[in-house]
Image: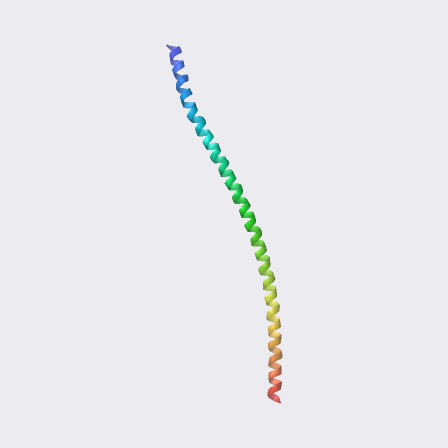
Length: 90
């Protein structure tokens, strides 16, 4: 009787082990796909950070150029005011 019981236990375990192997395999595939997705997203984030830094530098350059233009416009405005006042005096 003990031998039949042991055989029955092994048969039950054998029938249950195959689905466990399929389940473990599907989990490993899902993990591999998730890791691949994460790596892809990390690369995209790095590219976007690089582009953001370039845009930020371009904005700084534009801001400096605008400040220079403002000074030039103020200088021209001052010259025009002086010319206008001289013309009124004549």
